[in-house]
Image 1 (cartoon, rainbow, N blue to C red):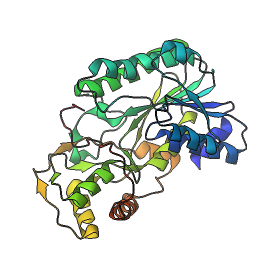
Image 2: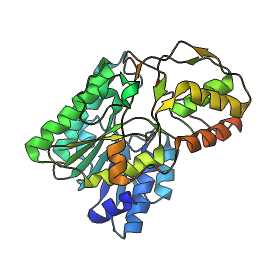
Image 3: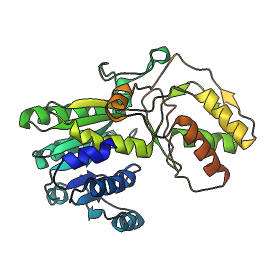
Amino acid sequence: MAAIEALGRRAGDLMVLGVAGKMGPTLARMARRASDQAGVSRRVIGAARFSDPRQESRLKAHGVETIRCDLLDPAQFELLPAVPNVISLVGMKFGATGQEALTWATNCWLPGMMCLKFRDAHIVALSTGNVYGLTPVAGGGSTEADPPIPVGDYAMSCLGRERIYEHFSRTYQIPVTLLRLNYATEMRYGVLVDLARRVWEGRPIDLTMGHLNAIWQADASAMALASIGLASAPPVVLNVAGPELLSIRRVANQFGRMFGRAVTFQGVESNDATLSDGQTGHRLFGYPRISAGQMIHWIADWISRGSETWDKPTHFEVRDGKF
């Protein structure tokens, strides 16, 4: 696996900033296992506020060290240990509308602090495919070479985040990889879970954003870990997205057949959508192990059994940039 190989080539401890978010626990546990399988002795450290103490306990049970830290507090941030490998999952998206100042501070000011604190490290920083804006469905999705056209404070601040990393990477020769993710999903949250729940609950499906990308969260985490070997100054940009172009209508109808429920639609499909072309990452690290079809079957079974889901809608249907 590419993640094991990349972590096997890198020496030193690894810190995951924002480890208590949706993707953080999966990635931190994987980093621990991959390091052990690579035969590399290192600390895997997760830093976050840990508003839910159960998250901290579960990480510790898997061999991940934890540090409670409000990353936006400079005094607390400065106490973090200097490590040679950093993966930043920190970002603010949901609730950005109405909290624009906090969104920009989180997405732009904090990365600047990170670069100053970890200027001797290799940094992998999570970004988003939203920086591209809407792209024609017929084109197959935005590539890393396409110019960003962000819409709304969230997407603009995410492009700002990338520019901050680029500035400090060029200034201090910090190796950085910027990952434009679109979209990670697992059983409890994600674009496919949003669709499944709407079908299960009999709510109408808006077709205006008629197509999407989805990638299994473990596959996205593996690509993030593997990409530490790509880090360079200036930064390298990499899309992280599943290989399938998914139709909202077809996926919703598939869930409807699995649930034995009628599906109601509203609106019509637009000719453009928030889509990313992930082929470069697939060539570098291999195809995602979990297909969209497998995700759909797993999620349908999960929802139909009444299993836990997080109340964290992705708002994948948003077209005006207001999250």
